[in-house]
Image 1: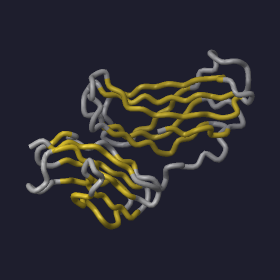
Image 2: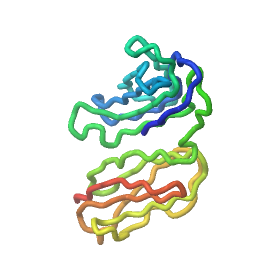
Image 3: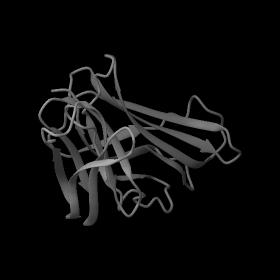
Length: 203
């Protein structure tokens, strides 16, 4: 996910916030970056940081912005991005992260853009024989409908239909014996739009 073009009135020294990171393997990491965009449109500074260790609770981070690589153009906006990566093929499957309370010196109007949006992790395991679990975090209480679709888009099962409170949740799908092996999509429909996750049933 990314926060695009947050306006600033001065050159921020660092990007700060809180992180909760749950990797499935030791090779999985989360890369956080920020690009300071000059008032004339060029890049005037960059910030990067990589976390590789699991965080059992929220931890605060601070990413210094390096202006040596850019021009002398004052920063007019900042683009912030986060990405999970892994050196092993498909190694990041099932990993998830949460970011909260992002800020930096000089920011104007940087609201919590995702305050009403669910943070939906990857199913774990994504290929399963009995059941699979999808981590979901809501910033606010929200109506959530989670159902399972086959490759033709037909609903074959319902995981959740109702309201979930703010906080962390685990939605578990245990398909009945009548549901055959194959590729399925767990779709969560919310007021802010649907989110779909792919899983493979292989008994």
